[in-house]
Length: 421
Image 1 (tube, one colour):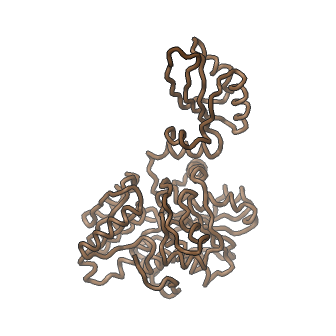
Image 2 (tube, one colour; image 1 turned 135 degrees about the vertical axis):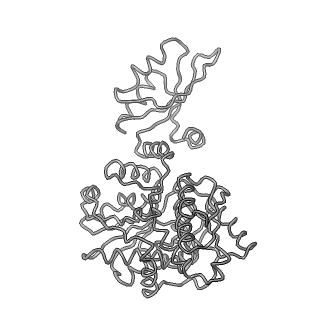
Image 3 (cartoon, one colour; image 1 turned 30 degrees about the horizontal axis):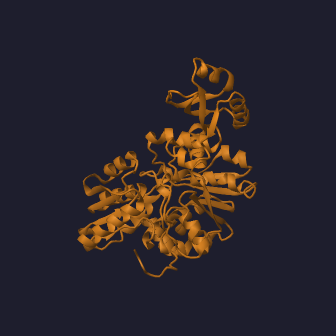
């Protein structure tokens, strides 16, 4: 953990030097209007497509800028990093390009797609170690490795050179648009991207409002800003793995405290809805953290009307095996998926009656678990039902109660519900 001056702000000169350094490594990604969201919100909504980097996220910028500044001795000794995936890929590619040996610690639940990408980019220059359940577990293990072997730690966000590298996105955005920008929505995990980008805008476009966006289950920056000091959360939801940290950086917190105009959180279910929407309507593949900025637009619908708005699409490293969970979370968020305990009379034809007389014509049973009990008038089943419209829920429950099938509603019971999803 670095302990230097916490009020460090990257200078424009340093960011411009980083941009020059990155010319042959990072792509100048497109800034393109999104017609779907522009029409929906009555605004000019632009996507900064960092998902189109070679490593499919902006993390190459900070990683390469930091590693290219190492001394010859540091390069020879090798580096260590901790990452949930995207920083690891940036570090891995930087290791190969700069011919530096690196050990990369990743949480055990990291999607396999990200692990394979790290192996591909790093080739023989990187070794992967899977440890713990979260970024923080991987971070602590990597720090022990650094102390043991005297290697340099490449921090994913709490580092001057990393922040300067991420800040180059701000320079690019401002060079790609002629009209004044009203809002920039930026995803926040540890805060490196928000810190760098916001500093550039405060110097070159001070009227632009910078809105940080975190997942609701990991509100480390929002909590810290509310408390007035960098606060470590006891527990977090790891679903948005690219933006789920228990504690943001001391440097990034100090910068964001002064630079961000607002810091909001978005429910994981909303993020999942955005992921599916971007894929189905725009053929854009994003990971959960990559959908954060777009997901925030619904919560700023009134403010952004008629405005020029940029959403930073931070990454596209999504594992296809997560699609079922993403769909489930999206359906739950939009009130189209519901779980019940249904009391079935222990007689022939009860299930047929439930399907024919209780379910609506567009309702679909997607989950069914039933255990027949002896010497009982009713047998209970856990039933998951997908609706076409959220308005169909009320009539469904009414019919279940009228016919004495209703047992309990599980969506509002997290202690029971966690075993189903």
